[in-house]
Structures are given as structure tokens and as C-alpha cells.
Length: 249
Image (cartoon, helix red, strand yellow):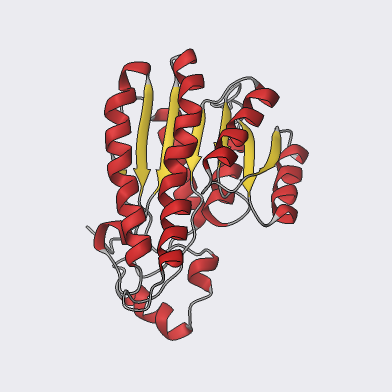
């Protein structure tokens, strides 16, 4: 593209070494944003993504942080400010699943998912808010899920966390609108990430049968929606968006 709409902006994407986070980081970098690639375990893939962005003329750094811990989230935002002097976009994407029926789910399995998938959005947002308020600008997107809308057997922890993100986005949107900060929730359906491709063929076949458009989504399709919200969504806040192939309406 001759014109990059995010030139001069800085984006933090949590859980960006793979899957949806990686696709979002790539898309925002293509539009000219400097990208902070957050990871926790896979430094090799994070460094690879940074190298890819830089080789294409973009700016990026990789920052390790366990976003389920508030001190790590503050350090992530502090590193962003130290490196680039600002933060304009936060994509709170990091998440894990620990699937188990309620009668077998441990407290640790519940808490890990709540901390990583839900509390992390609060930790990162609260650390970013002062810097966004100072500039009177910010675009925050939290990565919820179709599971947070419809629930799922064996995923009470994951569903609760993802549903919580929708309510968090609505409340944050009302609080932060006066500072020209928008907050929205992305609720993708089943997308071709590790979480889905690792399922058995029978499970995948059954899931596809529930999707009117007859296929899984692609990470790039969700990332394009994220890009739209931060480039053209100036009058959109407090909303939930459902790229899911029609599985949940």
C-alpha cells in the first residue's frame, strides 16, 4: 500500500507469537504501526515475527511477559513507552484453555484461565490508560470468543473468562469515551489456530457441520477486522463483533 494508515502509531499485541495474535501483529505492522510482540513461552517464534516485520521495513520488538501477572503487564507497557514513547493500540489477545468438566476441574485450572484470559485484559488496560489519556487517544480490542456467548461443555472456565471480556469492554468503553479511547470485543468462532487444528478429525467435522458457511475461519480474517476497528472504527465502541461463519447469530 502506498499509504499506511497506522504510520506513527504504536500497538501492543499480547500473545502475539502465534495464532490470532500473530496475525493481528502482522496486519497492524503492514499498516505502518510499530508493534510490540508480547510472548511468554515461545521466544523463537516471537523473534521470528519481529524479524519478519523488520525485514519488510517495519518496526517491532519482542517483550516477554506473563500477562496473568499485573507486574508483568506494567513492565510490558513500561517497555513500550521506553522504546517508542507512546501506546496507541492495545490488542489483549493472550489466552489459554484448560478444558475439563466442572466436576473434574481443579481450582488451579479455573484460576489459570481466568487470570490469563480475563484478568490480563484489566492488567494491561489499566497500565496503558494513563498514557492513552495523556494523548487523548486509544484503541483497545479484547479477544473474546464465540464460547463466551454460547458456552460449551468442558469449558466453563474459558466461557466465563471470555464472557467477562465482553462485559469488561462495554464498561471500559463507557468510562474511556471521554478520552477518545474506544474499547471493543472481538468474538471469533472456530479459527484455524493450534487450538482448533489439534482437534481430532471427527470433532472438526462435527464443528464444521454447525457452521453455515461450512468452514473454519482464518486468522487473517479476524486480523482484518481488528485492523478495521483501529483504522476506520472511530465511532465504534462498546461493541462485540462476531466473525464466526454464522455459527452463532
